[in-house]
Every structure is written in C-alpha cells, then in structure tokens.
Length: 265
Image 1: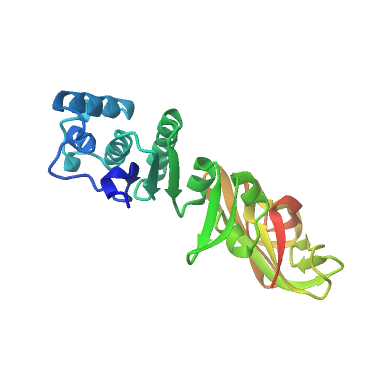
Image 2: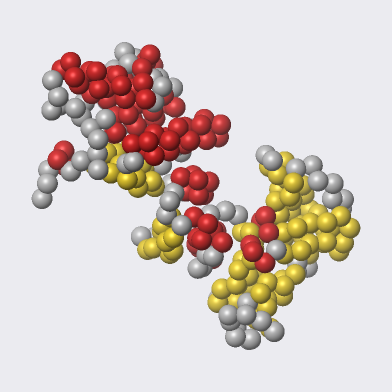
C-alpha cells in the first residue's frame, strides 16, 4: 500500500485546514518538498497568482478572509500536480455571492488543469453547476448516478428528486394512468391502476395564472423568482414564479409534465 504522501491525491477541506503558523506562500509550498527551496517558492507564487492571491503570499491564515483561505487551500492542493483532488463542501461557509464567485473560479482552475475531481456537497446548485456526473447518496447508499440534466429530469425516487431541489409531494392511488392531486393530474402510466403511489412535483413545474379556485396562501421574494404557497383541499404546495408576477388571492394551477414524477409508494 502506498504511503499517504505518495498517493498524489489533493484535498480541500470544508474548513480549509491551512497551517496557522505558515504564510499563504508557505502553505502552498508545503507539498513541494521534492523541489529545492528557490523552485518551491517560485512554484508556490505561481499557484497563488493563478488563484489571484500572489499579493497575499506573506499573509497568515488569520489575516485572510474565508474566500481567500479557500483559494489558498485550492492552490495548495493543486500545486503538487495530483492525479485527483477531493473537495469536501469547500463553499459551505461562504455567503451566496462569494460562494458563486469562488465556485466559478474553482471550476475554471480545475478545468484548466484538467484535474479529476470528486466534489462532496449538500447544495443542489453546486452539484448541478459543477458536475460532469452526479452521484446522489443517502445513508451510504447510491440512489442514482448520471449526468446532471438526466438526473434532474428523470429522478428514480422521491429521495433522488428532493436531493436536487424543492419538490411537492402527494400520496394517492393511480387511476386511469394518473394520480389526481388537488392541483391537477400527474401522469403515472408506468404504474398499474390501483397502485398506491407518490406524486412528486418540482416547485418550478407549477404554472400559476390569475383567477381560479386555488387560494394563494403567501407570495414572497425569492431572488429572480417569487416563492408562492398555494392551498387546495387542505394541501399546501410551493411554486416558483417570475418575480413580481401579479396573482391575486386565487389562481388556477397547471402542472408541467416535465417536472412531475410518480413513484410507487
């Protein structure tokens, strides 16, 4: 078995785990022990420059922001030219704006270096934007694996569907190839009539139109969208609509088939 340091596997931890007694430059240089001192320092500076932090080479971790620490950790992991790199929720402690900025910068660096990457995250947006292939796991078991669009559009279970974004759930019985929910029919032609089933509908798959019999319980800003809670027959679902869409107190609801799924209960 290879010694840990000989495996050529880089790692970026959730809390970055920079050596607090070393500067940013020394942290990056740490894994370059096979090079002489001058070449090690030069290589470390090149990697810091690559992540936009050459000017912070002499700063200690406590003098760096969270985003800067993340970039130093990435440079440190990539500097020894590993065969693969593991990212353990590297953006979880960052605010939304910085998270998106660093995610894009990290992905660009990894693509440029063509480094095989295993990225662990609980954030659906991170997974969908970062991955060439997604593996959804629960309790140590693989639920589904595939390219992002396939996994998002064709989930194999309720857990797989909910792992990649908010969903509405309704338990019912299949009749005439569909499950009748308070908001419309969800096709279930792959299930036999009489089967106890679960209808799963993504929030963005609900199209709302002013006037109708469904009550609008709440409408709240959600970035570029509004999050709307609609209520019918004692059941409340969530819908994502265009921001500032005037709806009124009641609406009609249409379920878009592309975002609606049925699974056996």
